[in-house]
Length: 238
Image 1: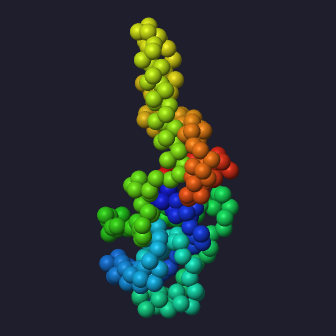
Image 2: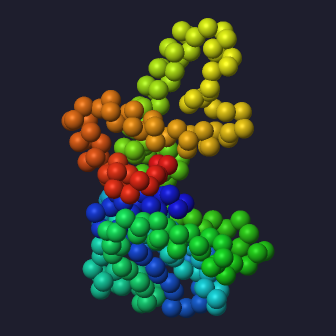
Image 3: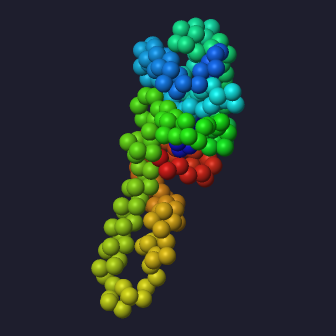
């Protein structure tokens, strides 16, 4: 979920921190979900490209409320009217997220904190209650339905590196195959995740060097993930 939030922030022109609650002490999740669905249907009808990732949390008094990030600015008075019409209260919080490189990770950490330690859940009453919220296309990036520019380049470099390694392996003698260092191959004590993390920077470099100038420009303009990697050295798995 944290990766989904980070992805939404960096791929939105104006990502907005979005928190809403009820005036009354609404503790029944079924009723809270009904109000939420009414609100979302109206917003999506007005903004077809609306995207949101969030979480249902309980306040100390037991009332359900929503912590989320969305890709849409709102007129404050208009949003207040929509919330009241949908069954929510007048009090809400919206704030545009700034463009600092660390902001996507910080907001993702804050919101996903409500999955566990910040959430006043009842261990019995709330057991099995669906709390994650996904609205719009390309928000469930952990399902790999969206492949970022960073991963596209890395996948290309991985394929090239494997072709080169396979050609070199075929040219080796039996002795060299048995005793040569494993290089980019997975070591017996590594998990697949460890192996991927060890090689991904090299694969990206190989993939990037194989691109033409036009392809590099296209990758940089696609979603900002390659640009962010060059600027910060930080990696995203989407």
